[in-house]
Image (cartoon, rainbow, N blue to C red; front, side, top):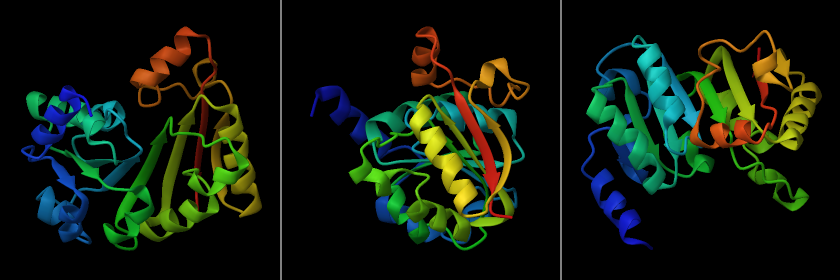
Length: 216
């Protein structure tokens, strides 16, 4: 592991807005009241990477609490540090494997989920690793409030098609579907937040797919 990574891992241990592994379990069922000290809605960004979406959403919506979830601490470091430097106090980062999400949130505790540019896991043998596979959707259904939305932004056409198919197969409610977000009617301020990787894709003239759906 490089020196920079080791330094970042050591530094996030001191960040008040980062919870690693079992530390986050203490807030299951009380994220808003015990951690954020308010009664505001809780929004997750899964596979948050550097946390650009998490921090930007938190800045836009001070009346909501945002939690970026990822396992790679050296990436989380960037978003967590930015939030601390800029005084964005309605944001936290949870360093866990997303497979274990049910250990950290009670049924109906989450108001909305964002999944922005996750690893598409294109190999058929890795379907269960896709963050929109039935295995993960079942977990989201438990922690989301009734009517809570899931948002998927991806440059990967295959993952977009796969997710749309799962939405149809399981009779979920589809609210928005577009294969070219920035040339559609849906490119609003929130959806126009661009992650590090998204900026690279756009420079290569890659289309950005977007889906918004719910379980009811």
